[in-house]
Amino acid sequence: MKILSVLFLSVLYSICKAEYVDKLNIIGNEHTKMHIIKRELHHPIPGEYDSTLALEDRNRIYNLGLFSKVEIEPIDSFYTISLVETFRFVPAPIVEHSDTKGWRYGGTIAFLNLRGVNQELVSWASTIIGEEINYGLAFSDP
Image (cartoon, rainbow, N blue to C red; front, side, top):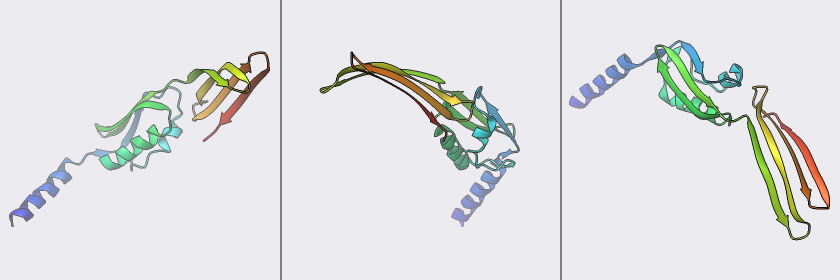
C-alpha cells in the first residue's frame, strides 16, 4: 500500500509540475535562417514540455555544425532556444611534403553557413615550389 501511495504522489507531482510551452523563442542566431532551426525541432509547440525531446532537438541543432552552444529550456511558456553561432570564415594554411614532388604550400578559406542556410563554399590554392599550381572551389549544400 505504501508503494502505491508513493507512486501516486510521484505521478501527481509530475502532472502538477509539468510546464506547458505554447510559443517558440529563438535567441542568438544572427545569420542562420529561422526555418533551418525550426526544421530540426520535433518538440510539439504548443504542448507539455518534454526534456527528452528538448535534448534530442538540441542534439539535432548541434549536428548542423553552425552553433558552438545550444541550450533549450522552458521560460514563461516559451520553448526558448539560446544559440551561439560559430565562425563563418575559417582560414587554414596548407603545408605538406611529398617525397616525389617536394614541398607544397598554400592556403584555404571556408565560408560556412552561406546565405544562412547551412551551405558551405571552400576555395583553396597551393603550389609546389617551381613546379605546379593547384587551385579549386567546392560548394556543399547538405
